[in-house]
Length: 119
Image 1 (cartoon, rainbow, N blue to C red):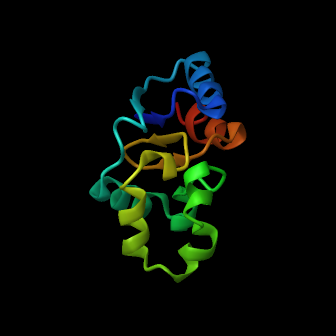
Image 2 (cartoon, rainbow, N blue to C red):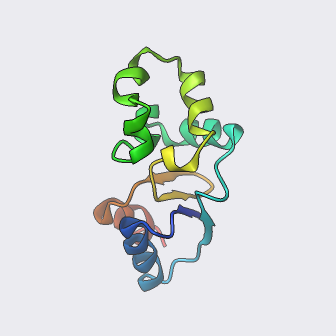
């Protein structure tokens, strides 16, 4: 599994510790220096089954600076994906990408249900 995170993010640190505490193997990937590509984002969105808005870091400074709260509803999905691909700081984190599922953000209950039960 790929663990997409931002080193300075406290939620990412919590999620990483949780993965380590549960002995779950993962490959870390720094979201700021290894920004998700458009094709990756398309595939992850399809795999997630979640609305595309869930992939946006709505509490991030860049999201606010770009006034995306007002702009996103008017944008086509393809344009939203292209925007996400421009800067990793726009992407919700952490992301945990497995072969057959993706977890967006860290929710301990959700992660436990998906990862601990299925091991």
